[in-house]
Length: 123
Image (cartoon, rainbow, N blue to C red; front, side, top):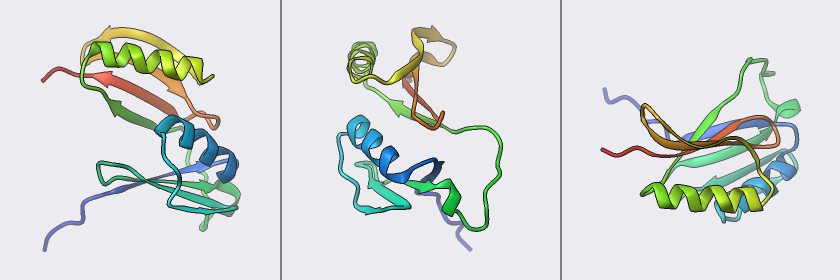
């Protein structure tokens, strides 16, 4: 039997409406589904990003730690440009652009502490 392939990430957030506004700005998209407790974005690559108000999650969620969402870019110049856009938009930048073992990267943070890592990893 074929195994199902994941196509959705759901982040538990303090406020779905506040996180929806944040991700609308970051992704340049409008949510395809929106309610007081949940929002969903359909990304161009087919992945779905859900934002669920943590107090509404059933069964109750108590998972420690956070999540890191990767944003691949085409080259180092695109990464520098995205860093400038996100910084100008007021995102909390945790790590300025830097060369690491896997490629050129920077890290930002959403209002709930989840990390947004942009990267260019040459193949």
